Image (tube, rainbow, N blue to C red):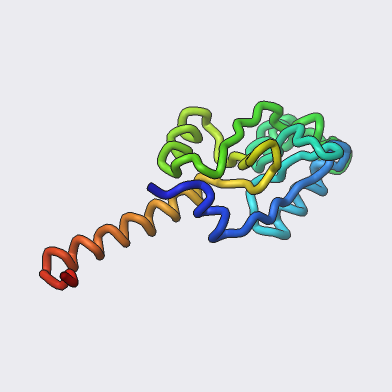
Length: 146
């Protein structure tokens, strides 16, 4: 089975983050710049939350808050579910579905080593299924070496 570490290896461990005192406008600008849907909120060396596009929509835009004045720390999600590099990708997708979240930070021995999205998991599982299908097709067609 494919592990979270396989996703991190493929996509890299670059983590985009922002401080809780930054404005929501700065957070949204950064998400747009990098084409991502979330930023980890890091206070010093501690992950204190995550801010997502959904947080912006539900806690800023829909309640008419000013994104240039509202601080990330006021609207970020505080509840974070961490995963480990050795977690199975299918298990992580189930966890995301159950928790209604699309992004999970990856921790290894207390160290932040990546961020995985539900899209990353879906892409990996799709690639795995294609490889399995190709293998089985070759086997059935008797092209299997040996």
